[in-house]
Image 1 (cartoon, one colour):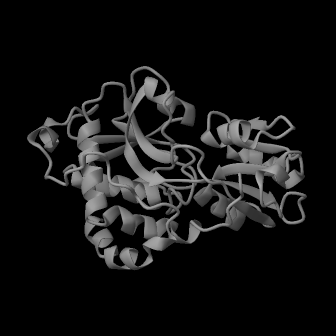
Image 2 (cartoon, helix red, strand yellow):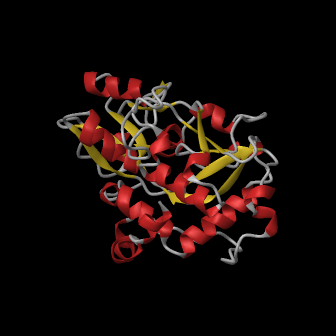
Image 3 (cartoon, helix red, strand yellow):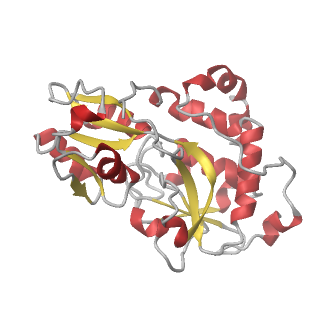
Length: 297
C-alpha cells in the first residue's frame, strides 16, 4: 500500500491547496529513522506480533471505504480490513512504517465515547475522527495530528438557515450533533443558539431528524458533511464550514494512558508527513471534501 501511496505524492504536491489545513510537522520532529525501541519486536503491543486497531462500527465514509465483505460480516458499511478510505489508508501506512504486514493488523469495534474513556484498552490505538481535547487527554494519551479539521453545518434546501453566512444567522435554529463530540461542543460554546441543541447517540438519529424537519441543521466535521449531502440526504446542503476558535482542531490516535507506543507512532507520523505520504492519502480520499464557504463567527 505504501508504494501505491508514495506514487501519489507528485499529484498531492500539485493539489495540496485543496486540503482544509496544511498538515503541520510535529513539534520536535527530526525525521530520523525509528529508534531501536521502536523496532517491531520491541513495541509494547496488546497482542504480540499483531497491531490491534480500534475504530467505530459502522465504519463511516469517507474515513473508511470499500463496502461490506463476507470475510468480516460483523463490520457494517465498510470492512476496515480493506484499508480503504482516509483512516483506512492511514492505518495501512502506519502499520507498514512500524514494520507490520497488512495481514498482521487486527481491528476491534470501539464505541466513540469509549475511545477516550479512562481504563484499560483492548487495542493498541483507536482512530475514528477523535479530536484532541485537554480533558480527554486526562484519561488517554494522544498522538500528534493526522488530520487538521474544521466543523461544518449541514441543512436541507429551502431551510431558513440554508443561506446563513454568520453565526448570528443561526441563533434561532434548532441544531443537532452526536453526544460527546466536538461538534456538539461547537454548538454549545461557539454558536450558542437560543434553542437547546438536540443530542444524539450517533449521526443516524440526527440525519433522520433533519430529513423529517425536527431540526434545522447538523454540525459535523467537514468531510463527513460532504458525505451526508452526497449520499445520505438527497436535498442536503453544506451551509458552510466554521473557523476553528483558538487552537486548530485536529484528529489524533488515542492510546491507553501511559502507552509506550505513542512516541513510536509519532515518529512514524513524522516520516509519513515528511515524505509526502500523508498528504497523498489526504489528496486521494478527502481532496473533493475539503472546500466550503466559511460561516463567520
